[in-house]
Length: 511
Image (cartoon, rainbow, N blue to C red; front, side, top):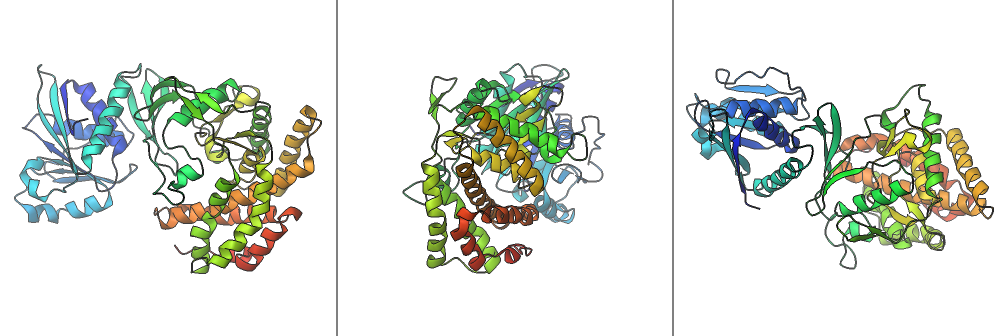
């Protein structure tokens, strides 16, 4: 797709809608250069971007003509709106703070052609001229530098939505997760749906056997697994969003909006914590009555192969503890002997899991990805929204994800009651249920998952500049201690006592 997009004969509503889509993708350091004659529509467009970024379509946005620069701090990122019509030269532009504004957030620059030599190399140029009718404008968008690819994706997103029943919708940014996916809520005639932007990508370069981390541990690299798994889970009776429109090639979906009541944000006595987690436990009980198929159909006629969550994938995930958390705590890399003993402590446990039956493993079945829908009945009261990394493995994995929630304190007593609820339901359905074996699998997968999470949270802080995840480390470490108490994890318990004891893990990390 060309790095130049001509948006022809747009009326006021279309201009504001385009501005809202641009606001979805803005990030710190972005420069948007607005060029055109007086009255061409530059300020109108800028107001559309700002009001969308502030999520207030009725906010009064003053022109920066006399102040030269207006700043907005209350949106999801700082934004500066600059008018260069009266600026004499580069020194004056620097004095009003262009450099600082770019360093802190995004910048909209009217009459940008007057200071073209001072603009960043990576930018989006938008030229405004009269349209074919008195009340329309034609906008020519040209991406410079990295904005060439970004503009192509913005255009693909806009045109995907324009071809759907939600063509006239107003998009509002939604806070996403730790992944590269992004979301917006589309508002139209009092109804809402969710726009998902999930570009295809791998999680890093090849690290083993010519495969990336995401390939080795079976993480989704495009939107197809989400669509295939969603269809299978809905058939299994799980309350997941319906897929309303899709562009599998580009990674865009419009899906059902299940609301805002995320488990992670629900607090207080209504609903009680136990009520929420009982309902979520019951969803897993119902799900495990349905075995996953190896190949899941896609709406384009293709299939998604459901990977096996095998010993190698479990091992590689657990080693994130050694790769990121261990050096953050100990101040040095884990040597070969330390790594060898860690792998040995887990080895027999992972081999044991490999011999178990094959059940659904949704992978991230915890409070940020569960929605409370009390107006519905039974298991439909729980909406599940993150499952694209689903695999076939041991059923205990999702139960431990839920009952040792990395973002919520689940008291040991409540964990025990819910664990018993799950096992009792399984026993009632299957007289051959082996409670002792399940207990060992639960503790093993809890230890594996908590090792992985400690590593991921340290990585998010150090590599990705997201220190907020460090606040969860004491909770995750405490869950790990519960798992290590299981008699079958004696070797792993000894490794942690020697290398990362509980008191050492509890110290605040300085990353």
